[in-house]
Image (tube, rainbow, N blue to C red; front, side, top):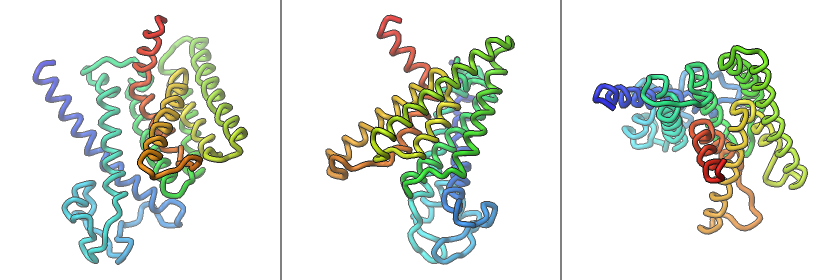
Length: 283
């Protein structure tokens, strides 16, 4: 890379970090107000003293650090959820650019399904939805249908349109759509069987519907990679929690966040991981 390319790479990464943090601030509003009857477009205020927040109180990540985690007006502790969600959103946007979006600027090569402007835009939406659903599952133990079901509809539209943009031949488009729908059907049936076998312990209807969203978004074969990575990260986390004494054998943990993490990892590096795995098998 020459110096100008490196400068472009660094600058664009910084822009995506700031953009992702700003989106994370909005996602916090969605998480905190969704289902409470509050208007998403209303002015932000302190949940303790109800004082409307000013511009300097709302700068993602920075405001929390500057105010030392306390409200400027009543000095009550600000929930750590605010900076954590903003930081997580910023990092997911940056990683999406580094592994996928950078190819759009000619900085790197990517054959990822999200490696077009249309696909990359959807990837940012996909990661944002996964983040919101993960926080809901961690906080309340639910994956809300009012967010998930519209997302499934958008994912279906993306599946169809992405196939049309990748191929001109109608039969090839039908083949791609069929494969993606098969992958979605397969992971959905797998989760449905898990729910039946476990009698709903540790796995619920929200996870089943989330698997449909993931299947439609990732398609063939990345949906399978995402589900595998979700179970792998979930199993590792469960073992760690047991080892440190936070959980005991037989206790369950929310699976949605790990399923979301696996899906996100599959979206940005799943193709490379799958290629590495097939190479080890000599295929």
